[in-house]
Amino acid sequence: MPILFGPVLSRRLGRSLGIDLVFRKVCSMDCLYCEVGRTTYYTSERKPYISLEEIREALEQAKEIANTYDVLTITGSGEPTLNIHFEEAVHLAKAMIDKPIAVLTNSTLVHERSVREALAKVDFVLASLDSAREKSFRLVNRPVAAVKLDLIIEGLSALRQEMKGELWLEVLFVKGLNDTPEDISALKSAIDYIKPHRVQLNTVVRPPAYPMARPLSLEELEAIKQRLSGKAEIISAERRGAILEKPLTLTELSEWLINYLSRRPADLEELAVVFGEAKDKLLSLLNKLQDEGKVAKVYHEGKVYFRA
Image (cartoon, rainbow, N blue to C red; front, side, top):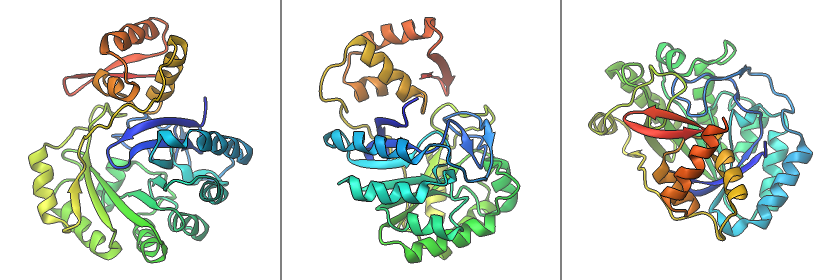
């Protein structure tokens, strides 16, 4: 599977071209809510999951299509900092791509100096901290035993002091698991200590890895927002225009759909916006891909999503 994917429509970054530094679901956590699915390679060990040469080739491709995206995002199907080449990948991206660079991370390796030094060089670090209480953290994020919550919080605080860009802290709430008054109080203390530039509140939107992960209502998110830092905001679901500049053949469209849906489930409305195609044409193609076993329908919160 190509390690360059998208652009995708990000609620936080606009048109985001992603680069994957690990294989599918190589991760130090097995979060209940993960839209990519359940972790299949559960580890905190850093390895060359994707070679530096593959990363360089993908960045060359990213240069060629720079007019199609707003930001290059180091992210993907697992935790990007687990790749031993992460630091070099950041250096290459900054040197080769004349666009803002973002990193999405679950924060589990931010305490390591070399990882933190690389993160400090990018324009945006979107770091997860779903709970500042050990019990809730273990319930929601299900990290490997080596991951320590106190090291995550200390690492994020150090990163905030060292980085030139912005640290955005994302908190994703799962109903009944990390949304108690005790959770919010501990989280507020951690936020006050870390001092991120932005705090973004989210909940389960797409089909999760585990069905027990249920969303909070907008009213519940608003109530939490009022208790947290003045920097807290609820992430909107705003959708941008089509990401493709020229029409695709059916074969090309099929490949793009599979690549897109392998990393995030999407509904028909989103796909129509992303690819600039009529819904009936897309639905016909999706049904064909479903018959071929390449795409599956997933039902979540009364909506139909597609996943590859």
